[in-house]
Structure formats: structure tokens, C-alpha cells
Image 1 (cartoon, rainbow, N blue to C red):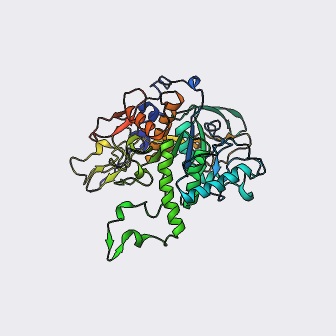
Image 2 (image 1 turned 60 degrees about the vertical axis):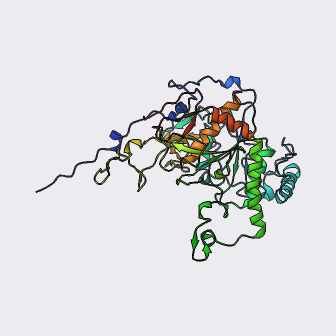
Image 3 (image 1 turned 90 degrees about the vertical axis):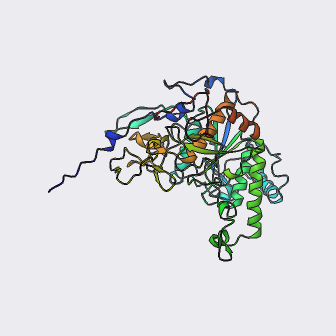
Length: 462
């Protein structure tokens, strides 16, 4: 007997379309009509300054063009003491920068204090924007993550120009915005496996530029802290953490890593440090999110999906607050959460009583590197110097994880500062304000809290 194989239903017929700014509506920042909820850009007397420690950013993106501070953004990937990311002339004078030279955050940290002196000397006296002639490493190839995060925090609606194949050019509206489209972003870029010295410099620089908020949407690879749950496990007579360590740390490096943890906590007392909690159900959160306590200003952020459930990859115990992200399928002894709308979904073998109903196919939509770089690539190169593109899709991409969630919480705090709701800006006070403006989500995760601008919570996929 011949059995005809059923034709899979195309994904376009199974997945619902959804508003690209659903995450802002869920946070209560904009209304269902897409208008600001009880806030206005005209109310801002001083833009909130947000320092983002991440990869570089595509500052030429139309939605980020007026959001990123091109004078202060610094790249610590290319040169030891940093090169200014968007300096057009490597010989431009930088001594006239209005920086907070007398920051006290390093006073009790010997190595960091000496490093700060050297850093201040370079910034106040060095005549070149590019340290020792080394140009910044801010290629679009390295800018995908930073561009997504920056857009979620502070993108502005914009009008770009689209270039047709026939050479015709027309205006292309890009009605996209971050949580606080009035803020000012200082991008501090490092690589993803940095030496502790560059991270010390990054956090010191946030204080030199007078950042109101610091966002770290990723982990820091401290060999002694990145996997704290391994400390008590043994392989024979060897500690598992020691066994998996690539090489022994030099004493001076170990001291730098120790001072970095102390510096992050100290900085958080002056301004909030918002951290991603991790995407692998880490019990204690990734480092440095796991430094958060009720006594400091470090804020650990987890992710929830568009149905209001904790995202499958985000641990309930490791986060103080949650914000919109995406979701992921999971099938293990603890939980079954599958995408039943997937064209090749097969329910055979799926146990009864599973939590498929929790899964949401919604992603957070974020700004992306225009052209061939980024997460959403294009067959066309960017058209410079007039910034014309041949197609729309490459400007944006699907994003998620606790990186997206932490960026949205950072934007929420920034909007609170910009609108005058959050007046006391030190870290512990900002954390207290955030909790007081968060709502308990009515799902089976009874301790899950999400910021809400209006005090109400709704989810588009519920």
C-alpha cells in the first residue's frame, strides 16, 4: 500500500505576524497605538548617558545616528589604553574632553589606582585620538551584538534613503525606537575574551565620562568566577575548575581579576550596573551578574517570552527582574517546551502534561548592522558616503536572550531618569526604584517580576 507523505504547511501560514515593538508595549512604554505612554521627549532637560560595554556598534545605522556619542565612544579592543571609535582624524586633540578626572572608585584598589593614573594621563595629555597610531577595531564584522543592544536601549525613529536597482532613490521611513529614544549612548567596545586590564579600563572610563547607567549584556571570562558551581566538584584529587583552566594565572593577572570584581561593585554604588543573567539556566547567573546583592547596585536580568513565561533558557533563581526576550525549545527531564507551529513538528513521543503551551515563537526585533555585516545579512554592500541601502530587511534582525532583556531594563531605567521619575541615581536607589516599578507576572513562576511603566502588564501572545 502506498502511503502519501503529507506536505508540510509553510511556516508563513503557521506563524503569526506580530508587532516589531511588542516588547515596548509589554513594558508599558508605548500604547497599543504606538504612542508614548505618559512621557515626552520634550520633557528631557539633560539626556541620560548610558555606557554600554560590549562589542562595537554600527553608529551609521539611521536609527542610531543621533543616539551614539561619536566623540566619547572608546574602543579597547585595538589598543591597550583605547582608541576613540569614531575619530575621523587620528591626530585630533582629545585633551579638551570634559571628563570626571577625580573619580574616587579606584582609591582602595592599588593596581587599579595606578592604571587610572596612566589612563588619565593618556586622555588628558596624549595628543592623538588613536593611541600610538593604532586605529580602532570597529568594523561591522565585529558590531552585530553591540548594534542590537544599543538599538534596544536608545534607537530613534528615522528616515533613510533606499536605492532601487534602477538607480532611483526614495525616502524609507524606519519607525523603530528603543525604550529611551532621548538617551545618549557611549559605546565602550572590547573583544569577547578580554584581558582584565581592558575591563578595568572600561569600568573606569564609565566614571570618567560620568555615565548615569552601565550596561554589560554579556559575561566576563574571569577564570576564577565564570563557573562558580564547579568549585566543590572533584576529579580524583584535582579541582575540576583547575583541571579545565587553560594555563595558570600570573599573580598580577589574578590580582587584576580580583580588583575588577571589587571595582564593579564599587562602581555600582555610584550608578546602576545592569547585567545579563545568562542563557544556559545557570543556577547562580553568569559573572558578573552573580555579584548582585541587595546591598549593591548590580542588577541581574532574566528573560521572559511573549506569553509572560520565563524563557526556557533563563533561570528563575539568577535574576532580580525579567524583561522580554525570545524563547527556545527544550526537551529534557525537567521540562518539555516545543514549537508546535513548526512545519515539521511531530507530536509522537511527546509526553502528556508537557508545557508546550508555554512556548512563544516571538523574537525581539532589534537594530542590525546595515549591509553584509550583522545577524541579518544583505547581498548588497552599504552605499557610502550617502548611507543609501538597496533593501529594508538588513536594517533589523531577530534578537533575544538575556542580552535583549538586560538592554530593555537599562532603557527602562534610562527613561525613568530622562523623565524625572528616577531622581536619586546611585545604584542601590535605582535598583529600589526599579523594583517598586515592577509587577509580579501571573504565571506559574510566582516570583517573576517585570518592569512596567504604567503599572499594568499585558502580553501579545498570551
